[in-house]
Length: 467
Ligand code: DUC
Ligand code: ZN
Ligand code: ZN
Image (tube, rainbow, N blue to C red; front, side):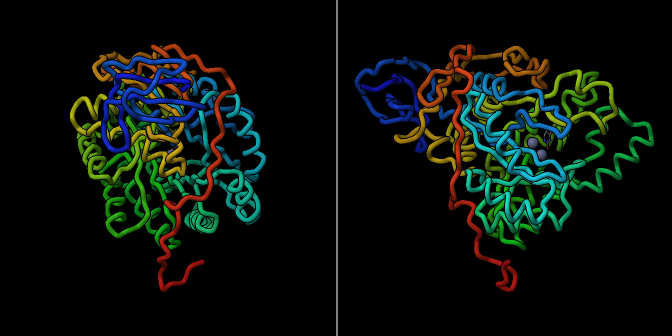
């Protein structure tokens, strides 16, 4: 007897939508077909789409700082907001504090994440790539299933020099990890920020002026060039503008293993939002650009230059974002719950992308790039039964309350969307029904990742000399 049978829905399988039943047993999908016998629970999905649960491979959750403070979204509240929006798996970030190693942080973060309800994997942020960290500690966490290293080319005190970035690329190549990169030029932003502040331009809107597209394009080009030098696959995070995406397109055309990520904020928000009285609530990095950039990003998505759409969820309360000049306001916006509705509405409902492209962008491709596929990201026999029942016609005006996250704001307040999750199943268990989150704290699983082919180096180095 199956545990769950979902009937009468239109199922988004990897090979197109099919009207069929989905049978679940032991937390996995065991069959897709017609007239599957009843299970213990039968869910009628008449009129609904049956979609893979969202995989959000870029979420900042419960990150600890050396002073003991931590980001406001806990693993429990992150699980609630994720399930409310149809996401079932996240990849979040373990910080490295300068002067410290990574092993202790891994152990601590693993325990924190285990309190939540989401299935989860980790990126390890590298801010201090000493020999001891890269030779002894990073191999230990890789053996425990961490398969991506995240680096920042800007931000105090996180950014790496080119030499340090190359060191991280070299280690990742040796160990079989993906390197994910925040691409903005640190020195250029410092210079422009100092000039803006000296001119009295301190309001949130000048955040965008401090880091125009050229700053992102330059760092993207450099990140790719150095990855090519070392022969190491990379993913460029949160691409906000066509100029940076064009660097990725050129790299792909040369056959490099370079993938691009964008986020809902870069197709829905604009730099003008930061000029509002509550402009700080729209501040993230890279910043939202001019409104004409949205169509260009959609084009880069359609062409396959940008492979995944994540939230870069990084929630701060209004109080934490208020009363400072733009250079000290924390960067980041919440988006875990809003990601799928915004991209479905702006993408599928408005005819910019197909349903298949939507599933690929928000679930299948992130799972593939993170080495989680086919366990995650697809509705197919053998995969985890992470499923969203989706009402493609439902019109919703987004409010902060609906987001069910830890903070008192969403930059998407008041936006109208067409398409909404009515139920979320994680490993076959209904964890959200009509906006009510039902999962038990501590029920999320850690996803230890093993070596995967996608991040194997190409074996192409200058002069054939590889480190
Ligand atoms: N930018 C980042 O790089 N990380 C967190 C949030 C943000 O806006
Ligand atoms: Zn970033
Ligand atoms: Zn981020």
